[in-house]
Image (cartoon, rainbow, N blue to C red):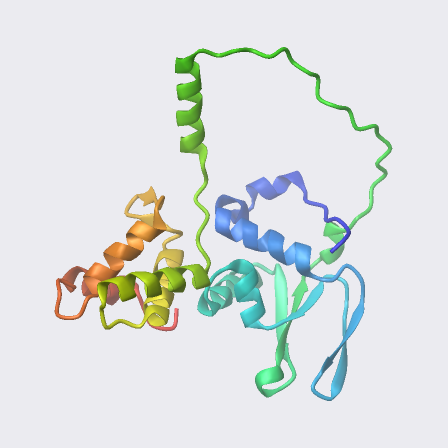
Length: 230
């Protein structure tokens, strides 16, 4: 989709900047709403989707965000409570769509004069660091790698593979959605630390959820922190 959006620097003071996942989803919304009016058929009616609006189902947003549909609903509720978006359902039955409107869309599209010449970065002389410097650089880069949450499809696929390997009578789709919803609600933290290996967490989840196995800890987690449908 061609075009651009304008982001103010003071967004760094906004609550959405503080959460990597929320900020990425907000940018996804801004980049995917219309920048010009378009007409769409829904059942037997024609609707006009204005600039700053988007016709998509919750399933579509779920795929764009790479999360479950209940998580999409919770995120939209946060945005609506802060006056950032408005939503309404258009159409009926299986063909209904959610009309999402970004409030004050024009502030993300204000044009500015851009009379400047892009300068190229100055070429610096090459330096041959010694082996210790290279190792320190690699360690620093490894620490700065940002964890990217897997999509629901990736989680369910991995659950299916591991459950088949262990021949355990568990439903990979159900367990995958529980796993995604549980850790998404905790912002992908394990205790006080950010998750680094979600596949390892899946293996532990399956072990705790194994029928007739040692699943007391898993049941305690779900009883205290996981509610079906969220």
